Length: 86
Image (tube, rainbow, N blue to C red; front, side, top):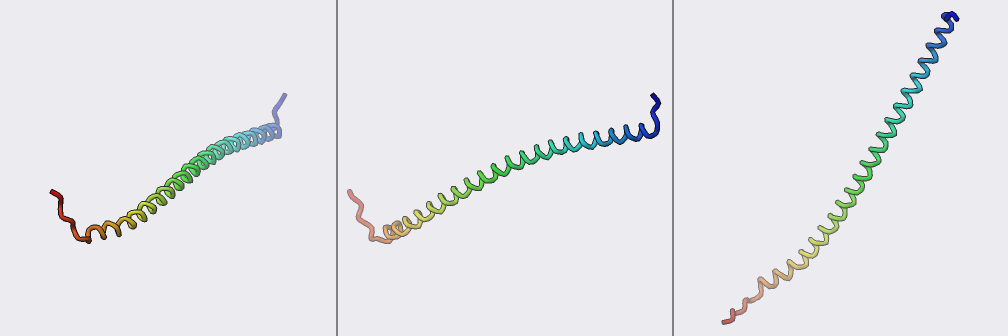
């Protein structure tokens, strides 16, 4: 069977189309992999943000408690001192 220019052009067109479809599938897989990694990073960032918020709340509560104690410490320091025993 002789290959005419028409047959060669058709075969070349089919080869190009097959190559294009193959490269699209490869990019599709790469995009899926990238999206999966981005989702994972997003979850880690959200977890870190929640941890930071919890730490901030704990620090705020500790500071409030220190402020409450500070007044009492000042009162004790300003009170007349007692005579030591013994």
